[in-house]
Image (cartoon, rainbow, N blue to C red; front, top):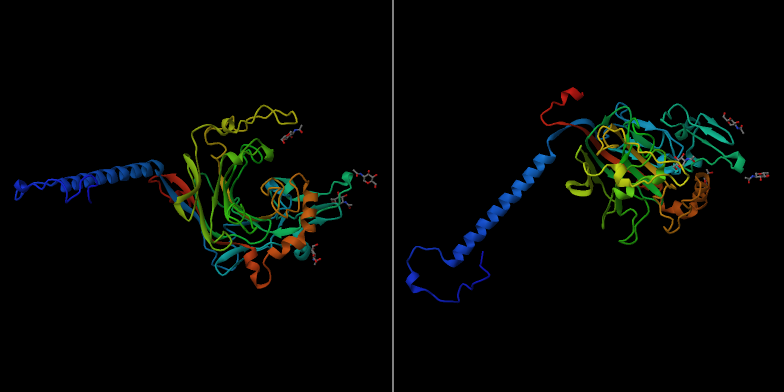
Length: 418
Ligand SMILES: *[C@@H]1O[C@H](CO)[C@@H](O)[C@H](O)[C@H]1NC(C)=O
Ligand SMILES: *[C@@H]1O[C@H](CO)[C@@H](O)[C@H](O)[C@H]1NC(C)=O
Ligand SMILES: *[C@@H]1O[C@H](CO)[C@@H](O)[C@H](O)[C@H]1NC(C)=O
Ligand SMILES: *[C@@H]1O[C@H](CO)[C@@H](O)[C@H](O)[C@H]1NC(C)=O
């Protein structure tokens, strides 16, 4: 390593130094630099090791590991959720028992048009104003299992126009702190909305978003044309939380991460998505644990303080703190049991699809039946973007593998969990 301060060949040549055992200026500066670098690396390593020791005084016990090598879903691990009501996203999807399959080492969720693939098993009661799903719909909320036309408003029954699937580990596998990793390729097609989430098992603090929801990954099926687009080039990840039963007060925007790719968009290859969730933090990463999409450290402000929800809703009802009685004030609602949910949605009026997106068929201010009808009217425009024929798998969400781990204190045996 050459000193930048002195030129080796210039300056006084000192003949009397010849033959003496001494260290030249060059050598001195060399050793000084080397010493500095060594100390620097040493300190760096120490800081990293210290950080790891601090973050990692946990072990992770595997509780679910599925590579989808069989030819059907392993029902000891998974549950096929049947839903029709729009849920927290107010989407246009009818989640059925027949829009998923396991083949060639992957789980595929492939959306179809309801008018072409609806079968009698999809519903229990259907007439001109009412539809009820069968017993396979056992959501905590009745509104997930039925739709009713508002006859006072002269509405006809509008069934969600897209059939798709929602797969979860509800009541099979859940974790209370841990790690989840998923290898997946995202779907292709306008207004398709893949969601990978951790969902609260018991809704301890009340209905969405009060009990929280952790988004490991979401994206949009629409093809990005420009670097600034927020479509199939962008991952959306983060934490949903807010007062009970009021999705519009969800403060996701305060705790979200956006991560863009500039080549090989999310529908063009498989990525690994991960979530590390401990009492210290929630971290969402992509492909490697050091490539972080979003990290939130618990322990600062409570979510109630962070949200600055104010005194009342616009309608005069007073907003109450759903986490007031929580044991872990700085973590709640993210201190309970959560299960994994993988779904492919279409559309939605909750604001995820911004109204200024080109060719968007509906407005977010539309009520759901109206938005769904408009979406269907625009079918000639978006349908050609949905791959079909022998490319139909591209339309789908492909899951290659899923792993879930329960966090335990370091050194504790995993045997107790099984
Ligand atoms: C389903 O609906 C779409 C859009 O209205 C229409 O183009 C298609 O022909 C319908 N399919 C059937 C089988 O009715
Ligand atoms: C449709 O079915 C529901 C539930 O069975 C019933 O309450 C309603 O009156 C029915 N409507 C019509 C128009 O038959
Ligand atoms: C529903 O239709 C009836 C009969 O056509 C009409 O009298 C009534 O005003 C309509 N109600 C609404 C809310 O549009
Ligand atoms: C007021 O708005 C909130 C949030 O949307 C809702 O939960 C509540 O039921 C509403 N109250 C009334 C009286 O409409």
